[in-house]
Image 1: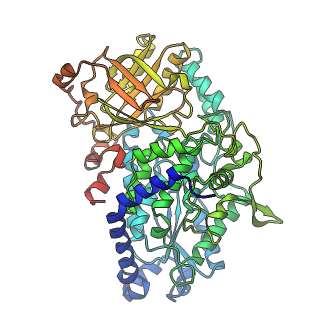
Image 2 (image 1 turned 90 degrees about the vertical axis):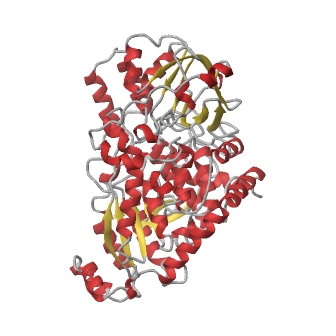
Image 3 (image 1 turned 135 degrees about the vertical axis):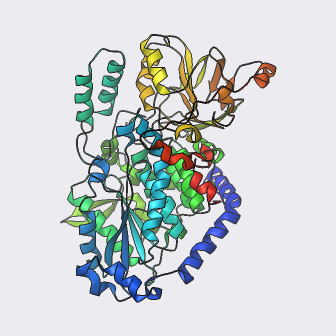
Length: 605
């Protein structure tokens, strides 16, 4: 089918806006490919240092015609999603030899978990960890002793950080290798119910801890459709995975064979062969638009309204929230996965998964089917599902019908005619709202403001009964410049309880909400942020706030003359402790819509 006219128009807008930056980027990677350092040009002492730690492969690494794969890993064994990578490098070295290549661990990058730091000081390092990961990736690849790279990472900031860093080495072919989700434990719906009971004081800490451990119980990503699993959907839509690799569970033969296939494929697309596919050419304007479409069609994480623009900038591509808003109105919602439904990602995979969604979007003319991918068969391969046949990895066409139409639907019978995102504008600035899990009657909220400086104050007011009314909770000084833009996921249970009690409730903040944000309308990433003069700093307790996702409006209903005359509130002093003071330079970040990155801003990207 011909490409949808609005998808084509948005893509043209992105291409035109990116023209100069993309041309400069392509010139950079071509220059790096042709004249940058590589193994044949390195001095003998340099090469000896590179080979000294790998006795078993040293002789094989000497010939320059054999690809050497650099592995950049986010392994640690504290976090379930990354603990799976423990033996991957060891296995990948064997699989590289099978393909006539060699492999080395080029470097490690940090992987922190918002689930562990949520609501505590460490969460203020979370967004900054993305730029730290990008810098670590660049350091790992800077040795220039690799003809390709395998990127091992899966969760919230890790995949964006890996990509931002890797794209500055865009002349290299690269593959993203996921680890897969843990098997289903306590359902996300039941877990959320226990959280709300705890917020109301109806169950104790012991019951809450047992419920949380029953939900997060083994290696692999969390099973809700938050930022980590949205990452995997986007990587499929950009053609950076082995097709269908996103949601195979850890520890299975299928997962092992998909990783093996990734190593073999990477060896096939090196620059010495006839199928050279550098990552800087794979990640282009159409691939970025495909990622946005995949996110919107599946009701994915709002965090990617920050991450995808940052990834795009690293490849010389400019995408903004207007593009997301227009795409969302053209792209139907095809899935209901928690928090936009009761099913988890394992149920999503069983019902058809990313391959089914991609097949349907392409069929409806809602995705670019002509993008360059790492797969030999092009983007059509991403509509085919991997399986094992007598222990051999094969791909089969996705079934015509959904395996469960309460979880995933065809393009002809979507859950909603549009995706889950809107942009809000008004005298408070520009904000995002995820509406895919919000009941339509709650898309418009008009209520008095109650203003807070952090989420702990909100929780205290909730427990004191001060919020038992219609209320717009305003939480400011939560942007990247103020405190690193921590997720405010601790607000989900109390705000959900207030909504359950029948009140009109909304959140307005210059911070982030969780990738698992759900049923309460939340105007987030409000820009400009309070620190530095954003108008959210003028809001006072009792001001009527209007949030309307239908009309794309976010306003303080205050007399214009009074609003203009109001002074900004006083900003809190910068916090220290938990290493936060070490990240002061990263607090010079640009606005959320640009990717909230001091690193990219300083680089002029």
